[in-house]
Length: 83
Image (cartoon, rainbow, N blue to C red; front, top):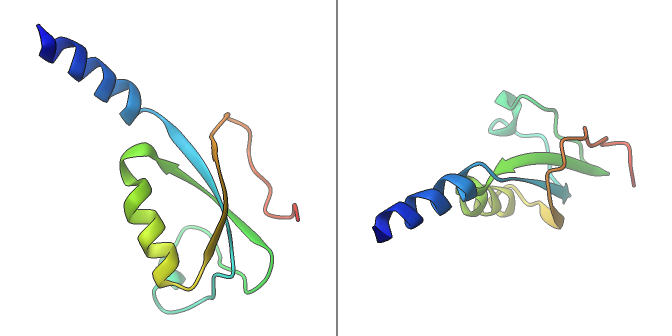
């Protein structure tokens, strides 16, 4: 019976998405294959599923980026022109 509650919360958590605002990413061979371009200045907004948050944080730091904010994704398209 306890597993019913645990599996329900995992499903709810797994469906959550967060928007990362990242600054300082550089275009490199590794970022060349991304679905979004990486700029030297300004902010990049990335939507990240809850289950991948830790891996994305590590990847961003490895690429020299700085996470400025993390917010729950509200369904609106974030513009990378905001500063």
